[in-house]
Image 1: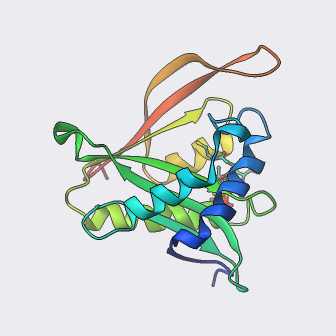
Image 2 (image 1 turned 120 degrees about the horizontal axis):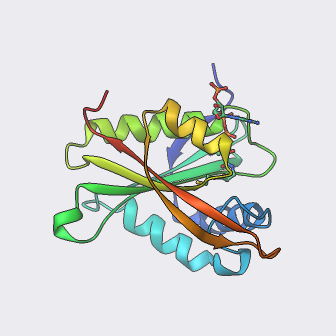
Length: 173
Ligand SMILES: CC(C)(COP(=O)(O)OP(=O)(O)OC[C@H]1O[C@@H](n2cnc3c(N)ncnc32)[C@H](O)[C@@H]1OP(=O)(O)O)[C@@H](O)C(=O)NCCC(=O)NCCS
C-alpha cells in the first residue's frame, strides 16, 4: 500500500502549493512559469473555483502519512461553451518527493475522476519536450502526443525548448 494518499485541495493549502511550485520553477525546463510569476492568490482562487459546487473541476493534493503536502494536480474546464468538454491538466510533485509514486497516484486519481464525469471528453496538457519523466508518465496513463509548439520556452541561457501538446480522450482505450 502507498505511503501517500490523495484528498481534495483546501484553500489553506494554497500558500504551501504556491511555495512548492515556485521551488520547482527554479529548475529551468520543468514549468512554463518563473518563480516570481507564481502568486499565492492565484492558487487560492483556483482552489476556490475548482472545488466549489457546480464548477465541475478537480483540484487534488497528495499527502504523506503525516499529512504533509507532497504534490498537487488539477483539471480545469475550459470556459467557452463549445470547449467545455475539454479540461486542462496541471501536475507538480513537490521537490524532494519526485520518483516515489506520487505523480502516478495523482494521475490515476484524476483519470478515475475524469472517467466518471461524462461532461469531460478530453484532457489537454503541455509538457516540455525535454521532460522525459513527465512524458513517460502521461503516456502510461493513456495520453498521446497531438502536436509540437516549437521554441515556445526561452531559458535564461538563451536556449529554446519546444512544448509537446498531449491529450487523453474518453473511450480511447
Ligand atoms: C513529472 C512528475 C509529475 C512525475 O511524478 P513522479 O512522482 O516523479 O513520478 P512517479 O514516481 O509517480 O513515476 C511515474 C512514472 O514516471 C516515470 N519516472 C519517474 N521517475 C523517473 C525518472 N527518474 N526518470 C525517468 N522516468 C521516471 C516512470 O515512467 C514512472 O513510471 P513507473 O512507476 O512505472 O516506473 C514529477 O516528477 C514532477 O512533478 N516533476 C516536477 C514538475 C514537472 O515536471 N511537472 C510536469 C510539468 S508538464
